[in-house]
Image 1 (cartoon, rainbow, N blue to C red):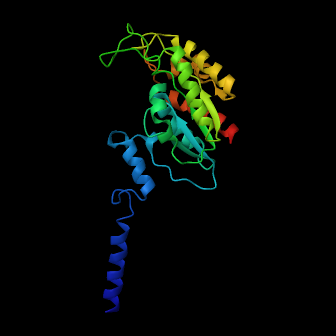
Image 2 (spheres, rainbow, N blue to C red):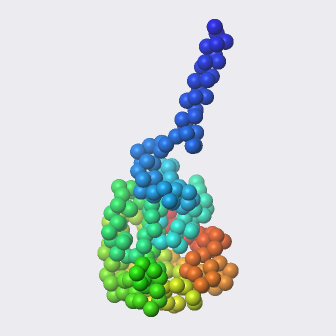
Amino acid sequence: MLIIANRLGFIGVVFAALFILPGYATESSDAEAQWWKQVGEKSRDKPAYAYVKDDPALPRVLIIGDSISIGYTAPVRDLLKGRANVHRIPTNAGNTERGLDNIDAWLGEGNWDVIHFNWGLHDMKRLKDGKLDATMPVAITPVTYHDHLIKLVTRLKETGARLIWATTTPVPEGAKGRMPGEEVTYNMTAEGVMDELGVSVNDLHAYILPHLENHQRKANVHFTDEGSAFLAKQVAKVITDAI
């Protein structure tokens, strides 16, 4: 009888374990369940959107940005492992108009120590019938971009976090829906806002510019995996300095 009881106990332990192993469990907490709901099924397999369970002994960092930031989020998280809880918003930040519509939800109720953020590539994007078309006007003019950034930074400052603005990375020749070099105008506009409001600047544009041939995709604003890892080193450095 004792042997049978022991075997039954062992089976019970194994059976219970199935429900805490990856693949057998749904979200382990309300916070995690809410996170996956925001991310959506299409993005769940991207490392940048992994659920981050905070270590309460470490500072909390939030990354806000478009697909360029999506590319460097995971390597930044790896570089800062054991030094910071690195989160990102559950989506592509898009342009500053989308930022204004969603900033409160993205900030949530979390107490952020550092927020590293950027908008730009989607503001200067040109579209026709939902498709990239360089002959069309920009989505958000530099003047409106300036006004939007004032509002966004003012909101971000309310969190009490250390803020770091990342300049917009280069637009190369042949990139669809954007004009090469136009990011310089938007960066000058943004840097004026950051100077006025006392926000630190991480000049990713200057950092990556000499290395585009090796790290940026051809005729594309996006970067190779190696390029994203290269950007991550600079992002991790400025975050480390801020914490």
